[in-house]
Image 1: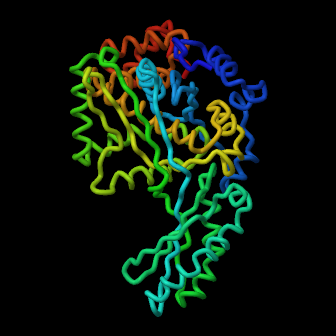
Image 2 (image 1 turned 135 degrees about the vertical axis):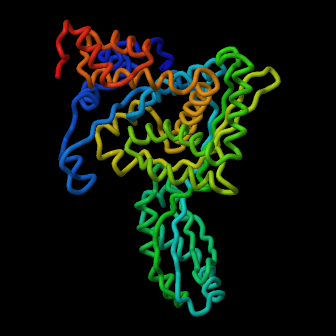
Image 3 (image 1 turned 30 degrees about the vertical axis):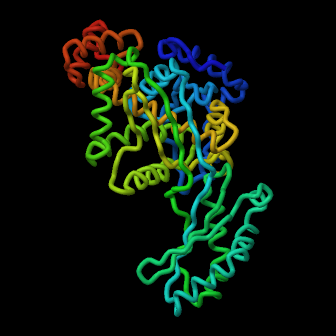
Amino acid sequence: MNSEIHNFHKMTLNERRNIVKELASLSNEDMEIMENYTNIKDLENMIENVISTMEIPIGIATNFKINNKDYLIPMCIEEPSVVAACSHGAKIARDSGGFRAYSMESIMRGELQLYDVPDRDRAIISIYQNKQKILDMANTRSKTLSSMKAGAIDIEISTINNYIVLYLIINVKDAMGANVINTMLEFISPFIEDITGGKINLRIMSNLTTERISYAYTKFKKELIGGEKIVNRIVMASNLAKHDIYRATTHNKGIMNGIDAVMLATLNDFRAEEANAHAYASINNYHSLTDYYSDENGDLIGSIKIPISVGIVGGATKTSKKASTSLKILNISSSQEMADVLASVGLAQNFAALRALAAEGIQKGHMKLHARNIAISAGATDKNVDIIVEKMLERNTINYSTAKELVVKYNGGKDGKF
C-alpha cells in the first residue's frame, strides 16, 4: 500500500471511498458499514438511556509512513483543517523517510488504597512476603493474559499520609486494560485486608501510564517548510512551550487533536488519553510533549515522548462495526503498533500547527472551512457554495448576514434553500 495519494481532498466522496476500499482491502460489507450503518441496538449495548446518535465526520489522513510501513489514518473530528494539516505534516516527513517510532510494552497500574492499618510497617512486609501469591491470585482473572505470560507482573507500595497504596503492575498486551485491572484488584482485596488488618477503600486502575511510553521522531526538510527562517521560528515556539504553561497547554492540545481523532474513530477512550498525556506533561512542571531543533544542515528535527494507553481488542472497538472497520483501515497487529501510529500522528499534527503559526498564521485554513460552513447554513448549494466562500474571503467578512446576501445574489435572487 502507498498512502501518498495526490489531490485526495479534491476528489469526490465516491472517489475517496473507492481508493480507501482498494488500499485497505475493504469488502463491500465494510464499505456499507462506513457509509450507512447505524444500529441503535449496538449503541444501546455501549451506554445507558440511548435515544439517538451524534454524527461526527470520519476523514482519512494520508501520506503516513511509519517504521517503513504505509498507513491510512481514520480520524473522527469536527474541527476544520485538522485532517488536512495532519496529512500535510506527514507528507513533509515522508520526504525524509517518514517517522521512526517505538512504544514500550503495555504496562499499566492498578491501585488499592488501604486505611485503618494497625501496624503499617508490618503490613507492608506482609504484602511483600505474599507477593507471589497475590500475583498468582490476580492472574486467575484472565486466562488469556496468563497464557501469554503477561498479566500481573509486579507489586509496588507507597505510603501517602496515613494510607498504604498498593500498585499492582500489569501487562495488558493488546487491551486498553481497564476492565481486567479492576477485576484483578477487586479479587485480591479481601486477601490484602486479611494479611494487613486494614480496610480497602479504592480499587481502581490509574490512567497515568508512566511505564507505557511512546516515542516518534522525524526530519522536516527546511526547503519544504519555508526555509531556515520558518525552522528557527518553530524552534522558538517549541522553546516557549517548554517553559510557559499557557503556551504549553495549547501546544499539547494540538498534539491531542490528532491522537484523539484516531482514538475516537476506533472508539478508544480518548478522555483517558487526555488525562494521561496532560498528567505526564505536569511531572516536573507542565511542559510540551514534543521537541524541535535544527540539525547541522538547518533542517528541522521533531520528536515526541508521550504516554499512550490504547487497545485493539475488546470494549467498544469490537461492539461498534464502524470502529472495527477503522481498525481494519489502519491495518495494525498490536496495541504497540497502534501506539506508534498515534505518537506519529500527534507529532505530525503538532508540527503542522507550529508551521502554520510560524508562517501564514493558524487562521487561514480554519477560516476557509469556517466560511464554507457559514455559507451552507445560509442556504448555499453545491453549485454556488465555492463562489460564495471565495467572495466572503475576498471581503474578509465571514458571517451569516454576508453569506445570506451572497446566497441571494448567486441563487438568482432566491433566498437559498431555507
